[in-house]
Figure 1: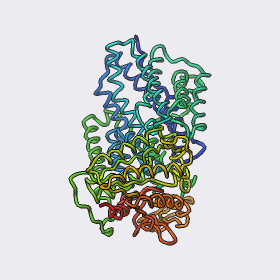
Figure 2: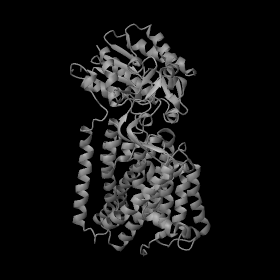
Figure 3: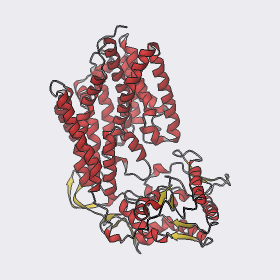
Figure 4: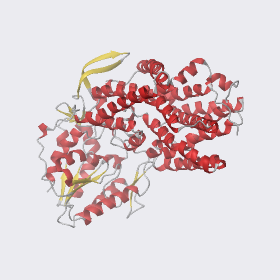
Length: 638
């Protein structure tokens, strides 16, 4: 098969511009572009198309080399990526709290290993910083692409050698399987589905199939189909929003749109003319730098801002992103891509040194960063070390946020069996769009049975959020997406629908079983107050400047304003506290831990202690907060 030479298609750079602009406007927070995240899907299809075109053409010409292929890829992504990672570190040091900086540092390492999609998946639970405050959030898509680039070329050439006629059918079959998997997981495991290669591969493979379709014969010009494709992409930007299951069957709209443009939007078509306008092509040429720069700049702006970003500030940030991207494209991307300007030896030395610096800083700086964790004045007394686990911590993410402090105090004696979103009772299950029915009930039953059977386990600490499950409402509307469609069931009475009855009966049945063994120590911990405001929203700094109506803080963070009225906390929790205390009155061997007085005086409940943040987000404790609570909770451990 004669394969024509690869010809530059300016409309593909224009398509890159159509992909990156909505992503930036989406992350800027312009609600009109609620589906701007689909730009990533467009990028995936383009990437699949280009990588396959290059491999097939070079393979047919007998010039393909894995070493040259991966060196080209390294020259394409690593110089700008490492520049941005190095630029992010000092701003993270200046703007982040202790737990945020540790999360940033671990993400920095994962970016270098091209596993940041896995890191983001693990960080997507209740216990994490708001996504818009994560400077490296967007690198998940880069990790997906690189994982694909490591697997696909080798697999393609192996199949090509063994059975060339089967290449396209096998790619098509894998794409269909990946698509069906994404549709299924979007309903039950949306976070895993969003970030992982398994469920994104079909978008890249769709582009690969495009390459095979137009390598020979040449692309077909079709005005109507290419315009329909462009319309599909643009419609997705305005139609979709954060509630759209993604990737899923909905993703077909932008993916098919991109396919139609690639297949039929060539040279003299109206679509090609639109996408080949010089300013559009120019944005496409710098789209990689634009994509990498925009998220860190927006994230740090929000971390430093004392007010929500005004539209003028957002536009200024986009302009700054454009300037930086032009600079990095011209002086970093173009120079490092050229082997005549930056020879291979010089390239690899520069990349290795820069990568080692990033890796070293990511691994070591958390140990020197102590902005918001002050242990000395808490007068912590550690438990006497034991031979192995004696204490189980069980509950949802509000149990897990106590683990840091309890681990510091109890060391290897404590074992965390918590699971985000699950109530630590026998027979109580949670179901909604994020939880498969039966998952929580099974996890909690298994953990409780471990505690029952193992004589070495002497103490169990049960805790979870209360009003969220019982009222089905978020505090001050924070985290509404966590409880959309939330429902509780009791396995012994599946027809029961009253949440309060389900909770009480689940608590009683659990205490009935656990309290039978007099050698076991049972502690029920009421939840800490929900702050309802993000630490960065309520904080102020020593000085501030006003830019276009947005105040940006300068200097040390002051958390004196991080409080909520006690009456609001009581209104939210009184019925829940009364239920628990009424039930525990029937179980004198069960200890009750109430952290209210640790946080609240007669008028307010605080979010900081001695200028140190107790919370890391609107309702989860920081490491300092975890130590603060665990220090008192540990006194109940016998």
